[in-house]
Length: 131
Image 1 (tube, rainbow, N blue to C red):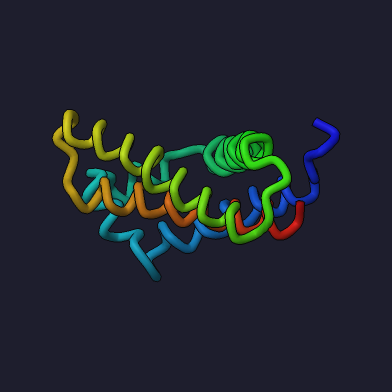
Image 2: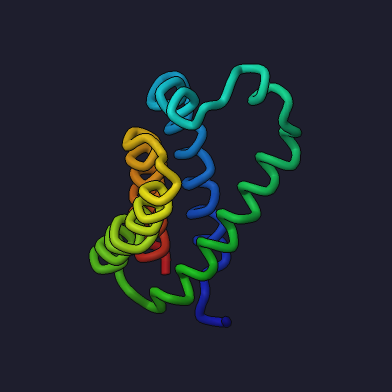
């Protein structure tokens, strides 16, 4: 645990959090995601923002810290590649499996899987560059 750069872990989690805000905003995929997920504006407004955003950040911290443990002292290039592989081949592929069995729209699978692919790629870049 002493080998982990906790500032890099927090920075990677913050980057993932900001990425999520952009990814799921109307500027990018927000409206398409909302429709594919079957969420109304009322449903989205009814959520508790403290739980949703606070919980999301805590989960991003957990993912970032665990990924830092996984990466070890990797440099930016290999860590970024590992992030791409983790996001695309583990997380997005797992979302794809669930989505197929749950009969989810392809758009939802691609949006969610794409976010996590970019998320882990970005985390790998930050953790590798700042190890």
